[in-house]
Length: 475
Ligand code: FCB
Image 1 (tube, rainbow, N blue to C red):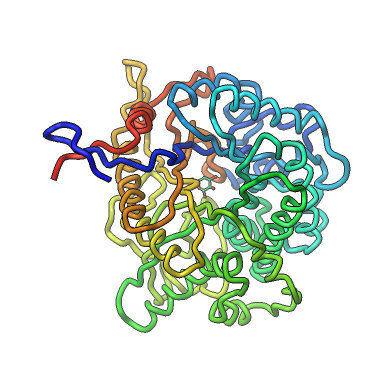
Image 2: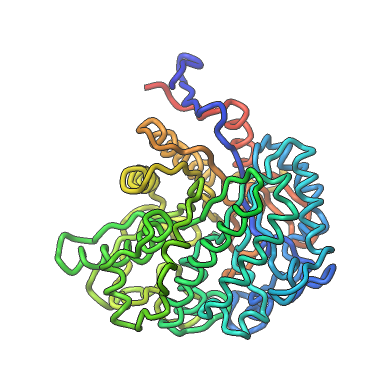
């Protein structure tokens, strides 16, 4: 649907009901880690361990969203966002991960949801964005099957409390990261380097997703329930057998292990073979895959980059460059190297590759049973600077968003049922093991004063939303 706007430009229009959002996660923005009875999460513990987070940063205050949420919602409204994706901190709701609900913790999310609705912004809730209650980690963490059942109870508590006002729900954010960065490479909390347990964690995160879907469905609200996966385009460096095998393995563990389980009810046999060489898979119980593939209404896709891989050992072992000496998160593919694909990179060192987004979206639409999708995260870190005119002229970020939204438009035109886009992220925040040094926000945050300053990219995004599409040079 292309219409002529002026002689020189064309508007690439998105469907009128397209969801224009921004995303955040609880631990990265809230701070207030002991307020109102919140319990301790694995990240609260991880950040105190020397060398785990660059600069020794922690999220005790983060960007103080817990206290400033009204101001933040006002900014969202000014940008014209139609939706906001945030996560609920499990340890606010159940301080030790099980047992009675902490009403004061839940009340924060009630207030946030009310504030969003009052501003005409649709709340999209993610139930788990990596902040496992520490007590559950002490009882075994995600490698323990019991954690998945605890998660379903927690999901039911939150959905029961907010399901009348929140329609869009996601279970687990990026199970790949939670499992393999948390338990194999140890780059993320809880920082364990136990490859066999990482595989158990991955399965139990999937199981947690499925059990939560069932628990929420049983409550009967008119909810749309999703899983959230981080998908990568993957290319072999050359056509050699070793490189093709490397690409199969990385695509298998990153993409197909989760997509096939959620949408087809089976793990891919080749990935089971890769993983079976590392650990017995006897923890996958009869019926688990049926639970994991409980029907969902939507697939939420986080997309950042492409991996180019080689089967020749000796390269960088981790795709997310690690701040400390680590093992590999690629269990069963430890020999694989991630090589430079020759594209421009963001401040994370991640290659910018918007064709990869078209590739991923059209592939999911083709290979999996028809499922509506949204892009639930997409964005880029750059070395922003607040200039003398009290602005952040982040032209590179705008270009990144523009290129990836064009990719979304292309995918929609090719028939992909893509219903929305959430920019990562609303405001600069605690970027996990990277601390505050990596800035992905549409809005700059002065950490000394907590003052929020919308960047140029935020103004561009607001204009794009207002127009309902992208203004591009006429062909
Ligand atoms: C994703 C995470 C999100 C943020 C971005 C940059 O993997 O879900 O919290 O860290 O990467």
